[in-house]
Amino acid sequence: MTGMGRLIFIGTGLMGGDWITTRGIEAAREVDFLFAEFYTSYIGDEGVKRLENILGRRIVRLSRDEVEMKERLFKYLEDGDVGLLVGGDPMAATTHVELRLEAERRGHRTDVVYGVSIFSAAPSSVGLQHYKFGRVVSVPWVSEKFMPRSVLEGIEGNLRCGLHTLLLLDLKDGEGFMSVNECLRTLLKLEERHEMGVVNEETLVVGAARIGDPTECIKGGALSEMLEENFGPPLHVVVIPGRLHFVEEEALRTIAGVRDDVLERWKNKIESFCPKGPTPS
Image (cartoon, rainbow, N blue to C red; front, top):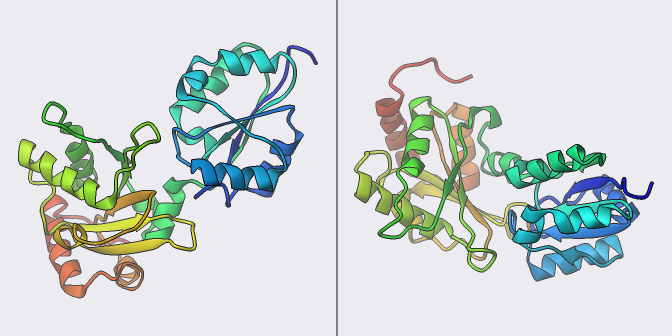
């Protein structure tokens, strides 16, 4: 088997690895070498310690360059099976798809142990129907020289189809985390620059923090109201709802605390984006 080790991608799920599956634990214990990368989905020092306690072995963290350059991993694959721990679901990031394909090209077998992902957990946490989400939109840190119109275009495209939008908030190389509040301020800055009429202070938004953790926080309302809310420590995401089914409306009232008057205003606003179409079922 020398020179033909397997590369196994192991999803650790949400919030520091507490959601890693039984299969993931077994795979992580069985491999000859165990690495982790958490720049695509931050886990923190405490999360790594918890994972090491669960797995009963040391985890070697890789930098972004080490994962993208690949050679360190392939060196270890010459001597045995390698496990790569990844936050969330491993194949949600293009980096890991590319790494898997390169391993296959070099003759190594690859396996994937799937994990709970924010892409499925966020809709569940706020009570919106998964199949009614459109394109996922990433919100970066902006500056006077960098104000990407594409953020608003992504939201607008979803709204015109009556679809919900999941906004993923930027990380600064593992050092800084965008909050719900910073995300909403960024959207207003982008709107001020590009004047697209997509987002304003009355836009219905739902902020979600630490999904999957006992301290999970879900709050929704008009953007102007959510700007002042305290969502606590990271990680945060934001959802902008599209056309709502009556069950989704009830979920937003019950889970996110959205008021009836905010819902009614938003339902009227959605008609300007998506004026016709059947009532969702």
